[in-house]
Length: 170
Image (cartoon, rainbow, N blue to C red; front, side):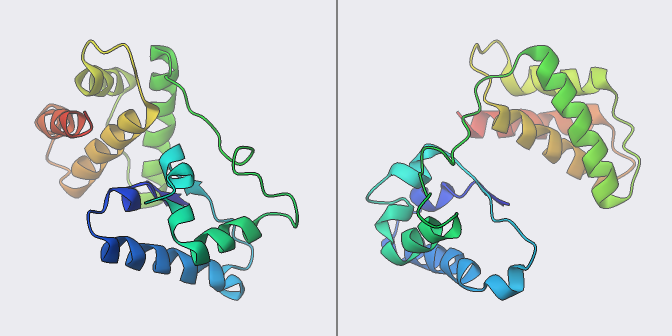
C-alpha cells in the first residue's frame, strides 16, 4: 500500500515530481517482484485528478496505473474509496485496531487504553466538526511509534508531538 501518494503533487519542482513518478512506475513495471501482491494507492483525489501534478501528468505512470486493473475495466472513479468523517465511536474503534496492529507489527504490548486513544482524538481534532480519518490515523501511529521507541515514555509525554501533527495538517 502506497500511503499519501498525493504528496507527490505537492512537490514544488517538476524534477522531484518526475523522480517520484518514475519510482512508482518502476514498482508497477516489475510484476514478477510483486507476485501475490496488490498495489493500493492510499491517497486523495488530487493524485488521480490533477492534470498538472497528479499521476495523469506523467503519461508513463498513468498508463501503468490504467493497465494494473482488469483489461478494459479501469475506471478511476470506481477504484477510489471516499473516506468521510468518522463518528467519535468509530474513531475509538479504529484507534483500538491501530493499536493492536501496531503491537503485532512491532512485537510489543502498548499500554494504551481506549480512553487514551480518545485523548489522542481530542488533541488531534479539538473542537473541529470535520474529522478526516487520515489525521487521526497519523496521530495514533505517531504516538504509538514514540511510545514503542521509548518504553519509559507515557502517553502524556507524547501528546504535544501529536498535537503538533494536527496543526501541521491544517
